[in-house]
Image (cartoon, rainbow, N blue to C red; front, side):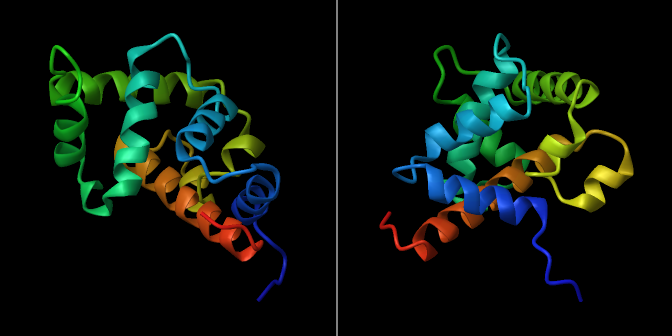
Length: 145
């Protein structure tokens, strides 16, 4: 078994070293910018809100529950289907123009090798687990949450 660190571990450790505090909203924005998710879209705004919500309550990593909770925070309320479509659209755009090495910092190799964009919930789950790993690296580096 190789002792070489994978890109996800390297990125989580790098973020833990460089960020002064484990500020989840800032980390989410950094990740979305890094992955080139189009910022001028509803899908970006939804991901910006969906990811911290899924991290706060892991049971929300069920698409309909997560989208219903976050969609209910908007005025007017955003329908699950509208949110799902907007997120799918931005992920597809970002995937088509992706830099593979950047995406490998957040998305596991088995998804990257598949050659098609991750589903909404695969993407959300990958980023949530990355954020958990980053927070653990932050604590291991001797920082307090």
